Image 1 (cartoon, rainbow, N blue to C red):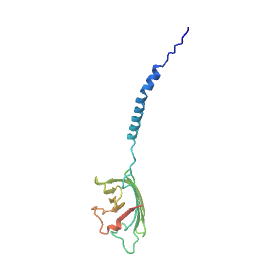
Image 2 (cartoon, rainbow, N blue to C red):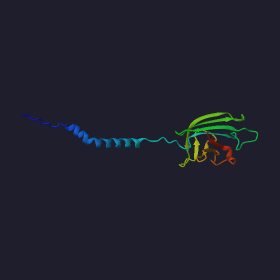
Image 3 (cartoon, helix red, strand yellow):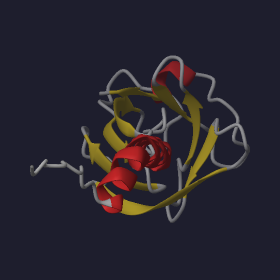
Image 4 (tube, rainbow, N blue to C red):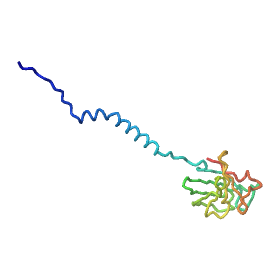
Length: 154
């Protein structure tokens, strides 16, 4: 009489793989979390952007009745560079297009200097109002007619 004996054959490799599967999924979760931590968000500084305004001519400290002043467009870039476009509305001054670097005068990033600009190169940054105020060259103080020297974010 022949009796059949069935012997289950299970390879060690498949058993080990089944037993370690739980550890493998934990490892994958850890790797995914690590990858998420290393992703940095690109944050744009609050002062970066384009600003526009109509200011007095270069020789004036306020808008005159018979003078149309200057149209000013200033773009502040995240990489600490600027583009400044000044167009004379009255013909009293020549139009200027400048590109260059800028720097903050203090750690609080409220006073900005446009490098390589001869005059009206100091600005006060009003982040809450999204405006820039052009300051006096020599003293970095506000003009008496400060509202004539405001550039609004566009």
